[in-house]
Length: 540
Image (tube, rainbow, N blue to C red; front, side):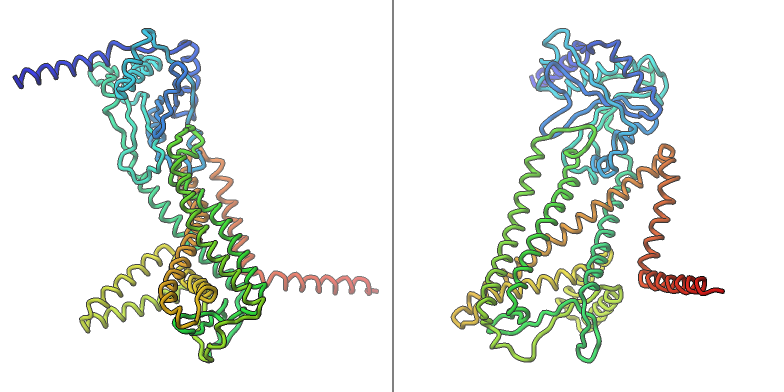
């Protein structure tokens, strides 16, 4: 009985498969005209891929809520490489791949009126029917008879990024080696994998762009510190500092005693934080969305995927809520401090001791990283000698974190992050905490909360700034990699742009290095010219 059921089930499946393969044939509307347009595209030297925008009745076949499906004719000469590029690589290369792409709209007709509609719930069968129609339309069985012939492929574009996907959803038709004809039943089974070096290059470009972004952000921070730093002698040592947090112990928390009697400082502080948050959030969040949902921003093929638009909106609203809540607390603290300074109320300062705990911030350098490595290595050796397992574990974790941050160029950013977080926490405590003994329990609970708010706020700001710089570097690096890979098609850009960029970089570097010398030389040249003019005027 079981064998009989299995036999009948197998027969039904085979019958359905045969029906799907042979009984349904779609026709291309105005096929002769469309084929002439297709041949014109296919014969172009630059075109390697021709995408078909398929219209079935009043409905577009290509678009879906989550995944967009496109069928394409490809040439054997790196046509598959173009078709299987990760969607993020397409976008980050400034859509240069469109140079090798053509497109045409075709309307498909179902002569039976019911054939294609019968498989409305069978995606595999519908795609197979489309494959058969396109194979016949492009005349693949008649134009070439070897393994290097063009073919027809299908590519599914996912809404999220595909950098680390092991398999790009693409399949291509292959010719039967016995009769040199395409077996349409294999068009969906021949899955195409992305070239391994494309994914490796994408991963390296992402890592390198983050590294360069962190280094650039560190340089910007150093430049800003250099512009506002002041000279100070601390413990007999002359140092340049940006600012110092002078912390006074009041009861069970610390506050800062600086600038409390100047109301303008607090208003300026609130305005700077507000504008900075708006600018970084406005620019940083799109940088994240572009890299996370690249198909929403891809120029070609253009895809409309409303479900991912909802995801982008939700991400934006969640991030805006977090940053907005932190900014609200910051502005509230500044308003309270402004109010206290207007009333000349210092509240806590009468309790401050002369011996104050100070924190300084200075420019970053690789020397600081060297001393950190040396200190942690020395601590690890001491922990091994003393068999202090817990402290050894903590030191190893700290050293690993420092090495990772150093590798991505962010070890200096962490110093700024901690300093600014501490400075913001001090302002929160000064504005909201009380030095009354009855508030001790409240202070103990709220003090870590203020530290967490400062931590989250500065993390969002630093991460947003990094994303803004990172996407710029990633676009430059990805575009350069694409141009170098297909160098034969970008000879003009390589010959003209690279020497010019090299000269521009050298000129900027020379100017920055000699920015103090150039004005002196100009003044010296002016004196020389004035002297020569005087000699000419007073000559006999």
